[in-house]
Length: 221
Image (tube, rainbow, N blue to C red; front, side, top):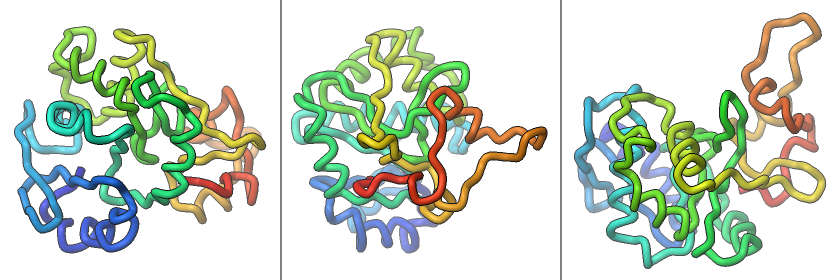
């Protein structure tokens, strides 16, 4: 998802770098532009970051309606995302049948488990089919306006279909999906004892964080 003001900058950079390595690419924006390609689709409520859930719902509905049978897995992320498509493709092959329920990304835990929107997350064809089928269910927060689209889709998938996150770490416990730039993960350290709370540490407290060169898997996506 992006804005028309980013078409000539970050979206063009994606198209000229990692976007071409994907089997398909589509940007959802405030303006349509077939050269990218980017399309603008209506959604409930205003055009703002605080309404990201409704924007995301419209995007998933569109993809589930028009492309559900064309691809095995579907990745969503912002225009500041950088992906290594071949690493992602190789990892997804290890999951098995795409008609099964797979919800893949960088898991966080707040009051619920969810996959970080900043790191990008993936739905298998089977999971997307179920989500789109029940996307307007009241138990799926169909009319809520919030920026927390990653939390909302996780709650919907868990409550309606018992689809939860996949642990995407490698065999040594190193993360494959990353919400920050590589340098930030390499240099991140937990706050000193008695220091200010760190949301990133809190969201990963259940399984812990590796630091330094062990932060990130060699086949990070």
